[in-house]
Image (cartoon, rainbow, N blue to C red; front, side, top):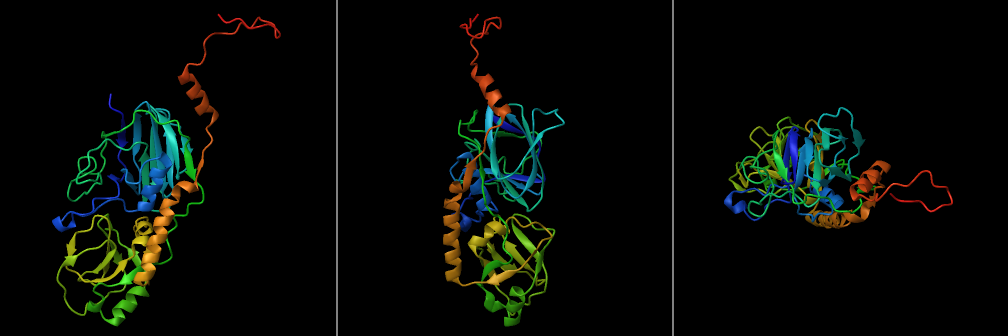
Length: 354
C-alpha cells in the first residue's frame, strides 16, 4: 500500500507549493511558489527537509487529513491556527497542538486544521516530502494554468497525497523558539519602474496613504482599496517582477504576487522589496497596509539580512519532550516483553521467567 495522506476535507484553499519554477517567464509561465517563503522554509526545517521541498500551503481554513502510512512526521509553520489530532476518523475528542512545531503521527490518526487566526497562510511540511513528479522542475501548483501540485489544482475531498516515506525517522520533534513572523507596520518599496508615468502628487499620495486589501485578493495579486492614483500618460506592456505594484485604469493599486502574469500594460508606481514579500503573503483580506519608500541599496541590504535569517532558522529550534503516552506506544511497538515475572517470588529471590 502506498504511503499517503488522505484528504477528508480540503479546507478553503490548500495547494502544494515549493520555491517555484523560475526561468520560464519568457514562455508565459509564472514562477508561482509559496506566498510566504519564510513559512515554507520553517516548515521544512522542522521536519529536516531541504529548503526546496514542497509543502502544503493553507489559506484561511485548513484541511482535515488522515494518515495512511505506518508513521509520518508533519510540521506546521506560519500563522496561528486551531490544530487538533484525533486517534481515528470517528473520534469526537482530540488533543490540541500549537503551530511552529513538528509532530509524529501514526496510521489512522487524523489532523484537523481549523481557522487561521493571525494571518492568511500556514505551511504543513511532511518529512521526506510528497512523492509527486515535478513540472518544469517544481511541484508548485499554478492554479490558472492547471499545472504542478496534485493534478494542477487545489486539494479536494478524497484526494490521496502520496508520501516518499512510510515511516518517520527517529529524530526528535522540534519547535521554534522566539521566531517572530509579525508583519511590519509599513512594507518597503522602491519607486518605479514607471513612477515617471505618475505625477509627483500621486507618488506622494501612494506612500502617505493607508490601503485596504480588497475581497478579490488571491495568489495572483492583492487589489488594494484607497486613494485614487492618477496616471499622467499611457503605457505599453513589459515584464512583471514579484511585488510589482500596478495601477489599473480605476486608479487603484494591485500588488502582484506569486502567480502573477508575466507581462502587463498598467504602469507600475512602485515595487515591494523581496525581503518584505514573505510577510506580505501573510496579510489577510480586509487588513490595512501602508508603504515606505527605500533605496536600491537599502533593499539589497534587507535581502541579505533575510537570507541570513533563513539560514539561521535551524538554530532557532529546540527539542520537544515526548509525552508518557508517546513513550509507551513506542515501547509496545518494540515488543520488548519476553516473559512474565512470577509475582509469588520473594523480594530477595531471583525471578523466574515462564
